Length: 281
Image (cartoon, rainbow, N blue to C red; front, side, top):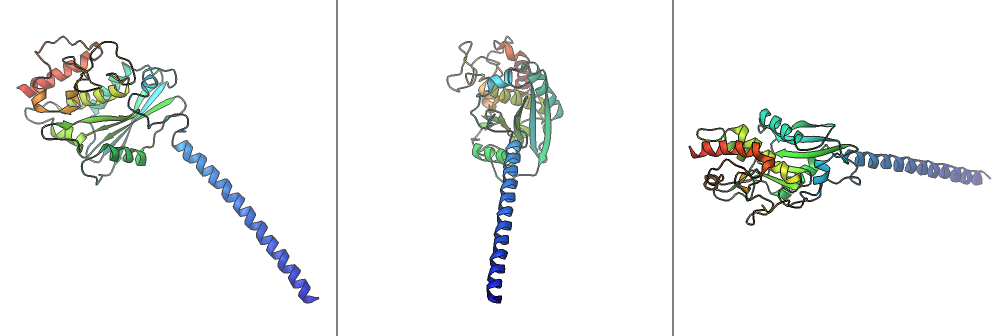
């Protein structure tokens, strides 16, 4: 009889343990679901808007207020490579004059430690963005990620160096180390002028194709030797503003005619003429 009672107690005890285990599993499953929801929120609800599309794919979202009424630029710079404040102010002015965002355009700055990557490949830049990006497009806010890199591009070759690249629909990298090496010194263009021209050039790529990426050409001005760039003398979208070659820069303004046919970018073309004048001095 006593042995029978012990068996009954063991069965009851085991049933309690099984019940407790089931409750624990249900609780853990609920916590995991909450964690997944939070992760999705932190990634800007990627099912609603993706930041991994091709360059130019979000031109309409940038230019109009149909979907997004405001823009937040996440400016991430490596320690020691912060862009000049005047350059960021110029960029904001450039964007405010061209993008219809009644909710405003703002910049959120963030510093990160030096990266031990050597010269950057675009694949490495993409991976770094995926690891450190914190601002994501959601509701009425479109976000743009900009990395100011502490190293040069791995695509630099001889006298030709890369100053910046628009590599996704809302993602850009500025090779700040290279920009600083080529500006601000004796007989060199000013740091602010070079930064301003390069930053606005790269933003223009994600703003509509400029040239022929995401938005159809309104006139025949694409550079046949450098796709997605302009062949008009003095245009902001000249390939020379992205791939810097001192020898090419001597001729970037052609005959020196001050009439710039890319009317959207007269102000920047004028600024780059100033840079070219200093280089030619």
